[in-house]
Amino acid sequence: MSTGLVPLTNGVNIPWTTPHVISGFLVSGWRGAVLNIVQILVSTAVYYPFFRTADKLAYDTEQENERLEQQQTNTQFAEQGIVEKG
Image (cartoon, rainbow, N blue to C red; front, side, top):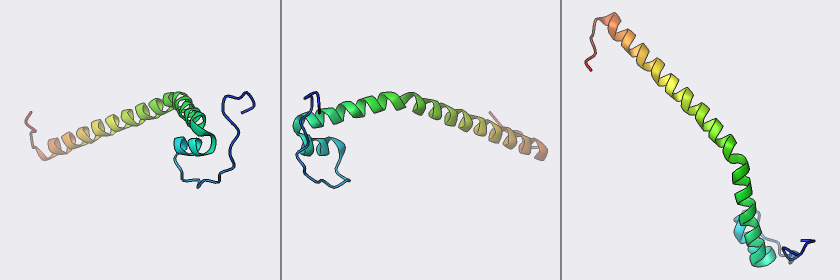
């Protein structure tokens, strides 16, 4: 605001549940909405690597659990003398 990139807010009180881009538009006009879009893009860029890491860990855990479950099922079949086809 001090650089003139976005105008000063107009003093409108908006509910906290208003979506970001709309609230930026209501408070500071179209430049406020553009600033909100830029902020969302920067936040996405910052958090994306952490999301990918968490997703990969969860995927690896899921794959390991499925492998262990299959191994346990095969062991139970072997103990009962049942041969799995395929």
